[in-house]
Image (tube, rainbow, N blue to C red; front, side, top):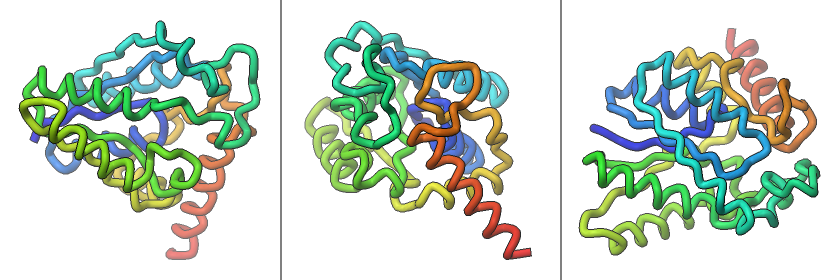
Length: 210
């Protein structure tokens, strides 16, 4: 099976990349520069793809940043990224998934994947099972051929993704989750806190299991 994966360079999508490869799939990774402050995530995505010998496309759509700057992830005038509602990028996954679908058709790939997780439901409207259902309904009528969109982690909490990552040997220190632009993770933004708590819970579960 050949598939296109939207790879942000973060923990969830990187773990999904390892999972897809482990299952024997041929993966084409697709990352996006949409004007995000944490553009360093693209460097991590590139390093991962180089290590795993995965074809990697970085699509520059930063010119649309003016259409998205109600989100503090791209708004240069507001650095508040500590609450989920401040980090919702308008229609982001719809835009990215349809571009990924176009790449899948162009490359003759069978499916599109993205790293939505259950832990994001309630915070991000484009990571829900209902959104996944509707984007697939769109893809059924959007082109001559239907490219399914899949999100294997959509029923998993983030700590469960961490457990999967550890099982697959994903180097967590080679993933980037911080929403703040900088050389080191801030440790305080919503994404950093979510990551820290998930890793702590996963490590606790593993420790108690031994």
